[in-house]
Length: 145
Image (cartoon, rainbow, N blue to C red):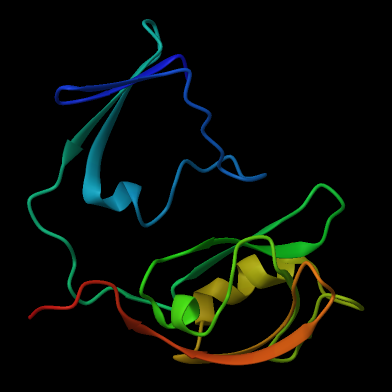
């Protein structure tokens, strides 16, 4: 985008990535009412007054890379995934019984989203080639204190 304006803050020449999906954001944009002005090429974001406090997440977003590997696209700071050392661009080898190195692909995972369990077992490979096994349990997106 050439410019992003938020209140008095103006950012020029901002690069926005959404991975290989046609979707714009997921959870982060759910906190805003988004209006797209196609004619003037503007995106307006107005904060929503309340957040769904029952929203649970693993704290990690998946996507796929240019070479068709399933990878970590995002990690929510202070989430369970963040505390367990998961980082963007780690390759996801397995999610529960889905093996992305053999028979499954990202589309299989997208279909799996409809029946996500409260806990998932991940096998990941970092940029150094080290394999890591992690169990993630869904947690509330917003903690009330």
